[in-house]
Image 1 (spheres, rainbow, N blue to C red):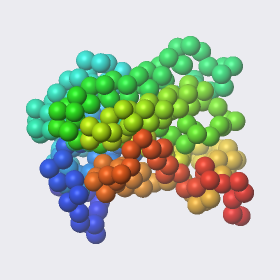
Image 2 (image 1 turned 60 degrees about the vertical axis):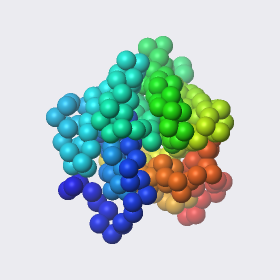
Image 3 (image 1 turned 120 degrees about the horizontal axis):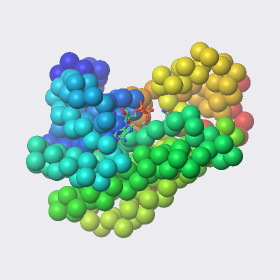
Image 4 (image 1 turned 90 degrees about the horizontal axis):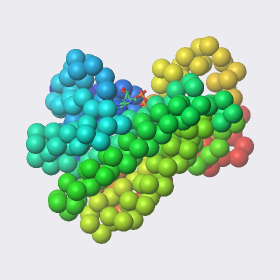
Amino acid sequence: MTDLPYDGLVTNRLRDRTAVITGGASGIGLATARRLAHEGARVVIADICPDGTGNDLAAGIGGRFFRADVTSAGDVQAMFAFAQETFGSIDIAFNNAGISPEDDASILDTGIEAWRRVQEVNLTSVYYCCKYVIPYMQAQGKGSIINTASFVAVLGAATSQISYSASKGGVLSMSRELGVEFARQGIRVNALCPGPVNTPLLRELFASDAEKAQRRLVHVPLGRFAEPDELAAAVAFLASDDSSFITASQFLVDGGITGAYVTPL
Ligand code: NAD
């Protein structure tokens, strides 16, 4: 296992658990795949990336890659069947794949095609993933589902991405409802709500338009954007028994944005 960056941290919280991570080949998903593997989990990285990339990433953490488009019910069913057949259980589902394309902006400029594409990838995918993983977890009498929403599920932005924000609001309320419905069957469902994360897209924005970037940064009390590893740490907690009394939650990992009025200079 060469790709695990957690030399100083030794824990076996997730030993003998199987995790399926959608959008696991990049960003928050990849950081989480590495973190969960480091904590002992058997990880299936699911993504639409090329097989070569996915296989290399999975090999680096002793896991497996499964090529799946989360907008396809058939792919999602096959993905969970693969995880069950390969590892014998599905204990953790991190339903995380998502997009935020440029043609999703103000409602006045966003066409129906862009609207629908974002809803399919960000929201309908979570419907499929939950619908098809819950029966495995019911059979086991346990499981932890973490769905990636966003801080824009709870805050409005003047720099609108209307379909994205609406999709994340949907993820948040779907997660809450499922958390309540399945609570007594041992299945916990939480919505991870990341604040802005230091991704290539964001770094590009900083490089190309410092003023636009600053407009966002000023709202973050911690004075910086999150690193993907900081989200991964939160997912590992939600996946583990350390969070055994947390379900149906809006789990904010946002550097304080949603709690702030005036931020420090
Ligand atoms: P990313 O672009 O780095 O990774 C997303 C991954 O999803 C990619 O590997 C991509 O190939 C995969 N993917 C896209 N469409 C797919 C599909 N149809 N089927 C399967 N896989 C697909 O993104 P990220 O920044 O790590 O974001 C991960 C999640 O976190 C998303 O749901 C995003 O909306 C959410 N989020 C991100 C931020 C941020 O600032 N980056 C903030 C809040 C929430």
